Length: 123
Length: 393
Image 1 (spheres, chains in turn green, cyan):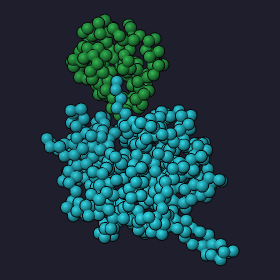
Image 2 (cartoon, chains in turn yellow, purple):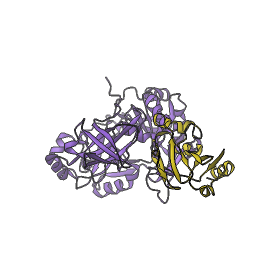
Image 3 (tube, chains in turn cyan, blue):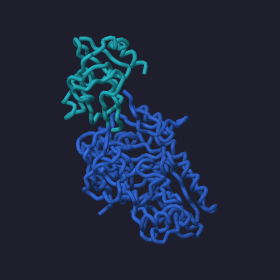
């Protein structure tokens, strides 16, 4: 399984034609204490670069963009009861949703682990 | 991701405050606010918020404007601009007040303290102890201070002196253990003080003004100190086991829970004190007699009743409703949220809103629209979290 990153601080685990999406540890650190996550409904068609979810910290609401185009097939129900999972385990238990990947060419331009780390170091 | 940072617009030249280095050393994340670089958080807003409710938090509020108005006619001159009773305010007492526009709008909200000095008897000179020149100490909002100064300069009589204490820092120590911690740092200074008392105290070489007040709903103190000593005082306070530095983020969530309005959001030039539910800042006598800027307009709102009122909303679920969210009763838009967020103490969303007066009664069931979803909300009394001011026995 390969993990990719966007410059909007989302991570994507690609397994076959299905991608699991979440926000990175860097992103949760910037947002601070997360109190609510609004996830897309299962069956929603999301489009690369367009709003897919909203994450609310104490201070502000932030959009999470779809890193790829496709259909949402599963969402992390655990975030409803415990949105702070995004803070405590952003890149594992705090995943947001799973989606089909309709166009793999959209993977181009995503960063691997190393590239993302140097991207963050440059911020 | 795009983050909507809820602070004032970036101002071209962002100033630095006396504790700038101190905050950075403490690991603060700095943001531009009210024209200055200010700490939004250190370890995290929720942890800082809860620490303040349980222990004591130290806030740097040096961006606020500290002003002195002095002169024989200071009280009567201030009463022309503020709707509160200033002349009856005793030396060493503080009161919340408003700077009013002619049309009844609110130019700023502020704290005013009668800071008239007591002059000790002087046997050689043969003088008795007596009160010195009438002096009032005002603390105004950071983002409004330049406008306030201009307004005061324009309207106060020439015999009255206005001094901007721009060489002073202002620290707020807030929380149930604030008094315990401050007592350990400086003994026998605050023992007799109750909420809204204000004293001067020379702490070694540091001339302080200590006022038992704040913006969190907790017991606490605001300490005015010459800028050069501010970092040393902050260090001494933070050396106490109860005290941690707290950023602007928690300051906002604490004041929201305490039901205290934030200027520029919950009160503005477009809102009047009646609609804003701040009538306690207008004594009955001054409300009736007038003689202050904006009285005529406010008296009309009082007589006719306000179209809308500032109220609190308890919101169902966990999704916060923020400033600008519209409030509905059925299909009809009946109000607007002016500040809202997630309450760390109550662990649920709360908001302040202006609502049509006929629906402003406690218990009224309404809906708030957030991202095209309707959230059930109920009008509630404020504060959301009870005040714990030290009012004495």
